[in-house]
Image 1: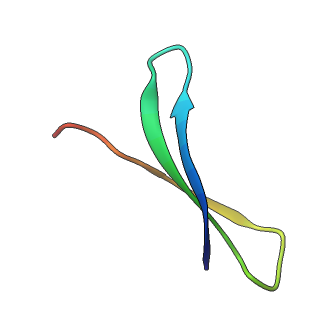
Image 2 (image 1 turned 60 degrees about the vertical axis):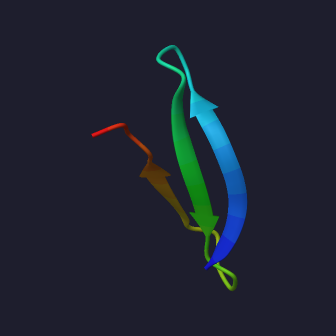
Length: 35
């Protein structure tokens, strides 16, 4: 896995950590919450 970055999902401005396969085209979003 390769870290692509941290994004904000709109309209809630929820932070998402975005990972991508190194040898493929699939992505894995991980939502970061306060709970």
